[in-house]
Each structure stands twice: as structure tokens, then as C-alpha cells.
Length: 315
Image (cartoon, rainbow, N blue to C red; front, side, top):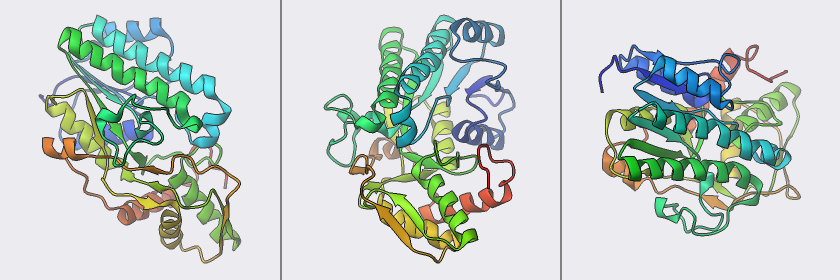
């Protein structure tokens, strides 16, 4: 892979896409393309095909998606299913039809069955039922994985899918209605610290989750870009998990909140455990470097520095 390779990063202004952009620039890549959603609607097939035909990138990295936590997935099932399929189908089919040889599709660990054995191996895909609170997003992402696999099998193109665990970091979404658990906790603990108030959190605190700093995810994408991985699907994570209660206490300490934590056991916990088996990526030569406490401290520092500009954050 040459540093002048033309690379289109779909979703380049999101948390993952922007991290990939930074990582590529840091490595000297100079021919990166990004389009704002107002300038290119990825749900519109005609717009996407026209854009790809005109720009003719060598590589597509698909970091674009409609994302959100349990609440958003529950409230907007149709949008989470349809819009994510529209986005990825237009990009993948457009890439195939315009002769693009390399495509990196980014998904989520929620593609795996709710009660799959732990840690989650790539071969557990489609072996049982999904977690109901995010099945709409998961089904969309599974279709993306299988579409890339089909192209890889039928056309022998280097289309690979990377499934990250729960990501967090710079440019995360801190809106309490649509955010994931870690950034939501950062905001809740920050606001509670300012108001000298307790923090109320969903569930029992007992589910176990794995987290990966987004800059580490970006490095995994760069690795997949610069190497032809022999299989169609790879998990990307730290291979370590903690309880939601431990996560809350870690964030509480990082933020400096001194009040009480109240757990609302009437709210859903979601999947009891989600730990990724990341041995395949490790065998290929990639593994994470940022430990959770360090990543949380970096994320909170960024949150404080950008509090006025963070989308949807109304302090």
C-alpha cells in the first residue's frame, strides 16, 4: 500500500472515521477523501454510485452507520435496520461495480448471538438468536459482513470485515438519548459532580463488557489496509472485560465525582456478557495498546476541552 493510495473514508467525521483519518495521516497517507453527509447522502444509491465513479478511489473504509445505544435501538428499529443496510449496500455494491479491489467494512460485536459462548469467536456468527434490544442494527451489520464475504468468495477481491468491541474515545457521542454506555456515564458523572448530586444508572451493574479506545481501533484498520488478511471476518478488541459497576467506578474516579451511584434494576441490562476472542487478529500481528483507565482519562480530558462544541451536549 503506497502513501499516495486514494482512500475514501465513509463516515470520516464520526468517532471511528475521524480516528482512522488521523491514524492514516500520521503514517503519511496524503490522498484521503471524505464527504460530509449534507454533501453526500449514503442512503441514496444514485448519489453514492456517481460519487464513486467520479472519485474512483483505490480503497473504501466503511465507518459510516446510524449508531446508538439500547434506548435508540429500541425506539427506532426501522431506521436502524433500513438506513444501515442502505448505507453499506450502496457502498459495497458501488465498490464492486466500479472495480474497487479493497474494502474494509466495520461492524460491531452485537452481530453475535446473545448467549454465545464466551469469549466470542468469529465462527459463532449466525449460530443462535440475537440480543433483542439491538437486533435491528445487528441484522444490518450481519448482512454487510456476508455481502463482503460473498464478493470475496465470488470475485476474489480483498473485502474484509472488522468487528470491534465497544468503542469509546475522542469525538464520541455524549447525548444521553442516543449514546453508548461509556460516554453516557462520563457525561452523567460530570454533570453530577457539577451539581453535587448522585448518579442514577440503568440495570444491575452486573453485565460484563469489553471496551477499546478508538485510536487502537484505527490502528487495526490501518493494519488491515496494509495487509491482505486471509479470512473474511476478524474481531477487534482488548480481549479483557469488566462489569458495568466496575466501569462506573472507574469513570467516577476519573471524573472526580464523590456522590452516590444508584442502580435502577427495573431497566434492562442487555446481553449478560460480551467478550471478544481477538486471537485471530493477534496471530496476524495486531493487538491493542491503550488500557481502559488511560483511555477513559484521555476521553474525559477531550470532553472537557470540547464541551462547547460537542454535538447534542447541552450542559
